[in-house]
Image (cartoon, rainbow, N blue to C red; front, side, top):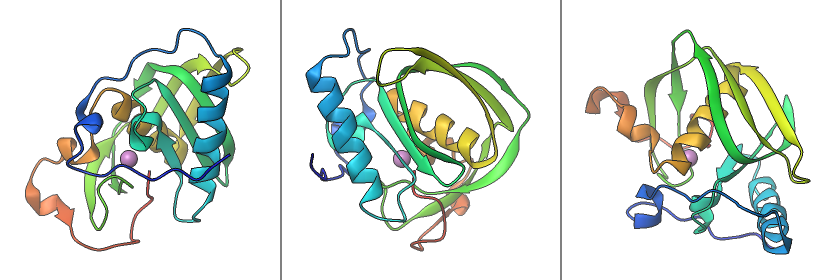
Length: 162
Ligand code: NI
């Protein structure tokens, strides 16, 4: 296992739509293990999408106190409800945070590391992290959701780094 370097803007991989995982083989297991190690390498890291480590595949990991070691392969949001204003940052956009709108509740389906189909109903930070990471798989960053540049602030460590 290895802690992988995190890709930051303006690397084009962050703007690409990531490909679906067809087979959960050894290379995917290795990617997942390395992503989990990378997200745990710094307490400020809450979640990671595979494009952020340079692999354009639909894999995300989340590691927050209320949801440790979540692995989702080919995740899809099947339901979202409500709207709330959140403060958010991204490991791939270092040194900034912003205020954007996210859903209050989301339901996500996908597969876990063993290939088993799972469904997660989430709110609060977990819902935010799921929306943020699934956005990454579609080449979307939180800064794409800013309604105005006034909502972007140049301060570090003020927001969850997803
Ligand atoms: Ni991010």
